[in-house]
Length: 567
Image 1: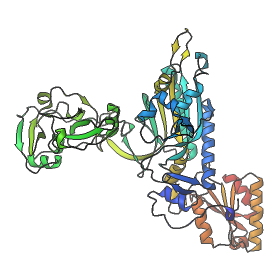
Image 2 (image 1 turned 45 degrees about the horizontal axis):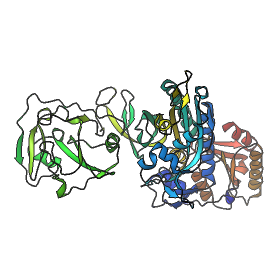
Image 3 (image 1 turned 60 degrees about the vertical axis):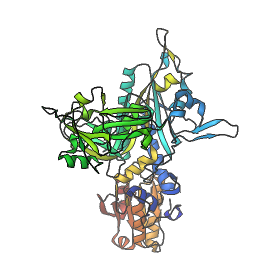
Image 4 (image 1 turned 90 degrees about the vertical axis):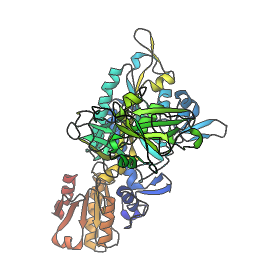
């Protein structure tokens, strides 16, 4: 490939709208071009990278007995109605009507399509187990696309679906895919990716893991314990409270608290800590606007994913009106009256606690001395709280929890019978009985993986692509191609590499060395070979690696062999 023919511009300035390095470098380096919010076109360098990632995915999926198929991007609403997700998924699912009036959707995921493909085929136990996978375009109408290819609306994804006749068989296969994912990320150049237990969300199922690249720019919060190795997504990590019950309970006393609304203010008023208070957080369900009041320890935050999973409904921050009966800033569990449909919930952090402060459900009044066992006898407790830095590890019980940010680069789910049951997929077992098969699901976003590798491996000048997914293997620079000796040697070396099947991009433009090397940095190709008049006079060629681990002056007669040796 001659660099002068490469479509796409490279430039020095960092685009103002790029908040993370990988996004900025991919725009500056001529990898992507913005089309619309969360939608990008790919230039050749990125296309070559993603093609190599896709090949790695195919090889590793084939190793675990996967069979590549292809589902449609556009699907009839009817198969999503079979699973129940046509109504349960929100605006992320793009729905439309075709010219014949048929209701259609753009695929954001393909569980329904997978079941629809094989349910007639797999009607006997002798057909199981099997796994099908595809690499396909998807569209998810994200509310807040961000960070270039990290969170987009249109994307290419490898998704795989396995079918089993027993939970034991699914679990064994799940572990095989887990190991395959570890190999995929190692081959792609980010072996530091960690697997964390996660929330299954809209996918459903009993067990799931996310594969996370730990980085400060990540949008997911990961709970880690360095002592025991515990790893979980914030949404899946249980918050554990160890504050003991006081030996004696104080009387429940109503206190006049003028102009005090926040937990911090009331605790300061009483001269106490926020973890000795009970606060109310109020939401409304999206489905019917009924109120959800959650009482939690004053120093903790609600994990809204946990709450949504418990309710089975999406939520939004409540609009508290005079008619509803709630007294904003003074809501408490004793004497609570709501003049509207509502649910009242209690976080585990309050279980058994006493001598707490809380709202008294009356303007300018709070209680102190709240005893949950005595004053709120009918409370049921569930885990709705976010885990926090320095909290208790759910696995080893030590106060060693730390929170890190991460980019999700892959996920695996044990789906169970969520889709096969709703879509009436069955098989006849060896005893002649009808059974429902069990599913697993395994996904990796191709563009996001490329962006994550760039985020993990770059310097201030550009990406440092690992050899296996780099757009080309060698970047040949002919400095001063107007010099006949330079041009002749570089042309000959370029032809030799092409004939040997070496992926090479050749820069023989009449530009300054500074421009040439700046472009080479932005392309991030592993090996750079520099031919210049000064080098030719000395009978050598400069060979350097993009990651700066190699810098050699190689005799001209040995340079081709050295390139092959490095690769």
